[in-house]
Image (cartoon, rainbow, N blue to C red; front, side, top):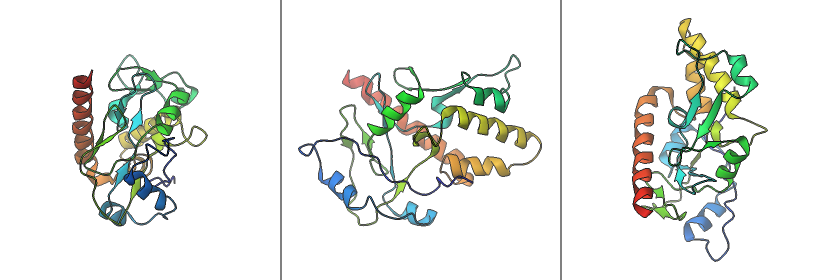
Length: 213
């Protein structure tokens, strides 16, 4: 089973030394922190990666249900897992400019992203908006959508999701729980709460980005 539930090492955001903030320095000091339990992650500042769209330059939190489009058949049902794996039937779409991303685009968005703590946002200029907590308990949560392409692609995730839905139709919710825990890095029992919160935060970011233009 994939183990994306807790934390992953943050990627280099390619900031210059002059632009480096105290918050970034704090992150550098903890980049080698080892993964802990889910409880320890929640108890920390819970940083999450806001990816940067390579087309419009806007930042947002990736969300499987809001940002990934999956082609369906004439009846409106998901295609077979093999069809998704073959490619051309699943795509990540920027919530701001609506541009579909290739895997190369997705990885550019990840490597140019920012890691604000929970409760903060990222402005279009890349600056973290909100009160950064003063804490020595740093935690990082990562999911499959921000992994390098050699480890995960949107097509592979789409295949897995199609398998999950097939299993659910047969009465087996085990794969669904595994998808939430391992691929989305979310506790299964909190899926509705977390999805609503993420959509709210993305909505705030889209509104703020529009006001900046």
